[in-house]
Image 1 (cartoon, rainbow, N blue to C red):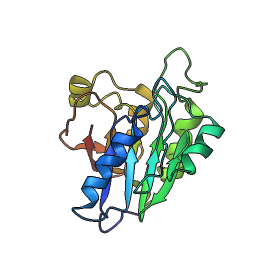
Image 2 (image 1 turned 90 degrees about the horizontal axis):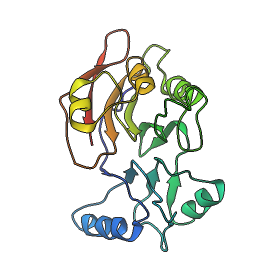
Image 3 (image 1 turned 180 degrees about the vertical axis):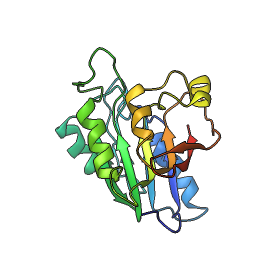
Image 4 (image 1 turned 180 degrees about the horizontal axis):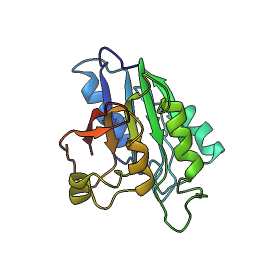
Length: 204
């Protein structure tokens, strides 16, 4: 089921442990109006595995990239109003169905996966929880660290995509797809999902 209206949310690229900068930016944006959530894609902790020193001013949700988030770190983040979503699945956030896939694709580690790369079971969890195999399934938002292979413009502008993620997008209806990238980009809409493909909009 698709949500009828889009609430006011913010989306951030890789935080890399710079939570103070993220929270300061959120504080400034709140002066222009209220936001219900902040969604973060890409590496959240950075090389130093830093966690926030104060609570997030807006409920913040994140995935991980090449950095692994332990249960202890996830608890530390939660104590600061930052929720680590996990490896793969769907969460309802501000009335939206938000799907997520943490980590990156690693050819050598797939299909098993590692702490920093997703495996076949993670991709399958994304598809099942997202409703890829049921009529009327799908999600409002998908958060990943890389684009899927097979979408030419994404490959040209964001680098090589992930084959398993490309296969998943052929099955899963998505409205908005946010990925981590060094440079901001909004790509032309592309088709996703089976049985009358939907049009997704990818932002990086």
